[in-house]
Amino acid sequence: MERMRSMSTSGIPLSLLAVVLTAVCGCSLRSDMQPATPVASPPPSALSIVIHGMDLTYPAGMNENRNPYLDYIEKNTGLDVNVLLPSEDAYEEKLNVIMASGSVPDLINASSQVWMDNYARQGDLLPLDDLLQEYGQHLLANIPKALWDQVSYDGKIYAIPSLAEAKGTELMYARKDWLDRLGLAPPKTLDEYYEVIRAFAKDDPDGNGVDDTYGLVLTAKQGRSSPFFGAFGTQPGQWVERDGKLVYGSVLPEAKEGLAFLARLYREGLLDPMYPLNQTASLADKIEAGKVGLYSATWYDTRGPIKISMDRDPNAEWIALDYPTGPRGQQGVYANSPIRSYNVVPAGSANPAGAVRLLDFIAGEGYKTLKLGFENEVWTMKDGKMVTDFALHDMHQYRGVYLSLADYYDPELNARRLDSLGPFRLNDNLKRIGAHVMPDAFAGMPTPAMGQSDALLKQLQDEFDSLIMGVAPLNAFDTYVKQWYAQGGEAMTREVNEWYRQSKPETER
Image 1 (tube, helix red, strand yellow):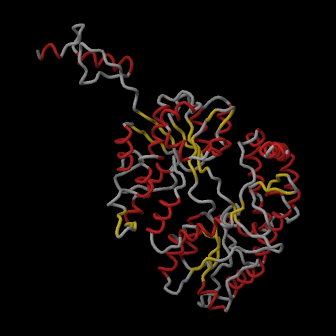
Image 2 (cartoon, one colour; image 1 turned 120 degrees about the vertical axis):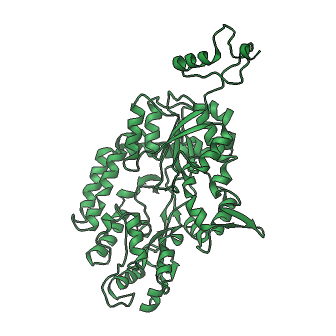
Image 3 (spheres, helix red, strand yellow; image 1 turned 90 degrees about the vertical axis):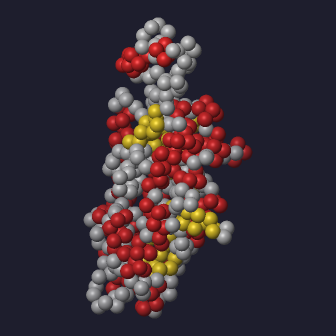
C-alpha cells in the first residue's frame, strides 16, 4: 500500500513528477494530493511589493522581509510577501526603472499623483474595480468616495489611496524661557514675530554671553516657512481662489511679499545662514543643542527635538504660538493632501488579487495592530485608558512601513493612541493646525500639463532660495512668474480652471 501511494496514476513516482513539474512550469505537487483525485492548483500566494522605506530602522537581526509584523501579515493573509525598498534618494526615478524593466512587481507604492497619472494614462496599470469589489471591502468602506474619484479615469479606478493622518503638519513653537528672559510676550502679528526673531538672534536669549543663537531656522527649499507665507494669504505649491478663478500660490504677488519678509531676515542676519543646507536631522540638531528658540515645528516635534531640548536643558520651556497674522489680517498653514500615497498594480502583475488582499487586510483586520503595535506588548489597557510602552513603541515604529500602504483616519483610535504616548500635546497640536489649514483649491486628477511640466515648474520654485539669500534681486520673482507661465503654467492654469468650472453645480457654471 505504501508503495502504491508513492506512485502517480501513470506509474511515475510522485517525487520524480514533482521535480519535472517544478522544472517545467515552476509549480509543485501538493504533499496531501490524492493520486486518483485531480485537485486544482491553488492561486499563487507569492506577492512582490515595492514600497517607500520612510527612513525607518529595524531592530538588530530584522529587516523589511524578516520581522514580527510582516509575519503577522503573512500568517493572516496567506501571502508570501517579498518587500523591495529602493533607496530614499530619487525614489520616483527608481520606480521608473522598475516599470521599464519588463519584470514588474505585483504592487508599487508611489507618493506622486502625477507619476501615477502618467502610467495610468499609458495603460501600464491595471484597473482595480472588480478586484476591489471581490477583495477590498474594507478599503471601499474606509476611503471616501471623493478620494476614489481622484484615482479614477473614464470610470475606472487605477490606484488605491493611502490617506494622510493629519490635515496639516506645521505650527509655530517658541521657547517661553527665552521670551521671559528678554521681557517679550508671545508674538501674534508678523511685526511682533519680527521683533522676537531679532531678539532671539541678537540679544543673547540664552544668557551665555556668546553670539550663538538663531532668530529663525528653515530647511532646504524654504522648508518650515509655510506660516510666514500664510500671513500674506498664500501657500506656494497650492492653488487658491481669486475672483472666481484658481491661481497658483507660488506666482501670486503675495508669495513675493512672503519672500521679501524672509529675505529681510536673511539680510539682517536673523535667519540661519546655512538653512539651504538644512535637512530635518540638522534642523533637529540645532534645536536640541539650544541654538533655536522659535521655528515652525511639525505636530510631532514635541515628542522629538523639542523634548530632547528640554531634557538637555532643565530651563527650556516650549510653548505653541498663534500663527503669525499678516498686514491684511491673514494667517494659516499649508494643508496636507488627503492622499499620502498611491498603490498601483502594474499591468503584468502575477498576483493582482493578492495585492488588493494585502491592502484590504491592512485597512481592515490588521489595522489596529499595525497602527498601535502588538497589544499587551507595545500597549495595554489600564483603567479604561491605553498605556504605551515608549521604548517598545519606538523600537516597533518600522511597522509604519506596512501601515502606510493603507492608512486612513480613525479619529477616535488616533486620539487614544496619541494621548497614550505621553504629555506631548499631540492632539492639541493637530487641533490647532486643523483650525488654520489653507486647503488646496484644486482637488482633481493631474491635468495633462501637470504631467508634462510639473517637475520643471517645481525646479523653478526651488530658485526662491536665491531671492531669500540675495543672490538674485527680489524683482527676479517677476521673471520667475513669466517663465512659469511660459513653460507650462499657462496651460496648467487653463486646465485647472476647466476642472474648477466642471466641479461646480450646473447653476453656478
